[in-house]
Image 1 (spheres, rainbow, N blue to C red):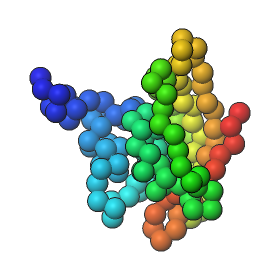
Image 2 (cartoon, rainbow, N blue to C red):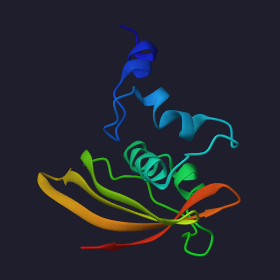
Image 3 (spheres, rainbow, N blue to C red):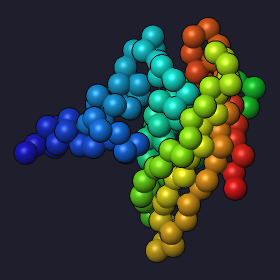
Length: 134
């Protein structure tokens, strides 16, 4: 199997049932008009973007009111291990939360990040605002 064909069938880092190009890859590499339709889909695509160092996508999907000026790529020794979505809830048509756990390992040490993320929808597009980490 060639590298290109294996990339087309590789599972999505977000843990979705579809291969990466049909799951989060369509949001990462698609036209700007193609946007994640729900806050949960955006959160999953952002996790995949963190795994794959898709830094421009992360910045573009971060709300301007809380967006950092830049992001650093993953350190070479960091390995993302998986994502578990615990809960996704719409407060109304323009606000939602997604609770998740992301697991990683760096230099032999495992860690997990448990966050309740807040999202807003503006002009039909979802943005990550911030989150509470526990």
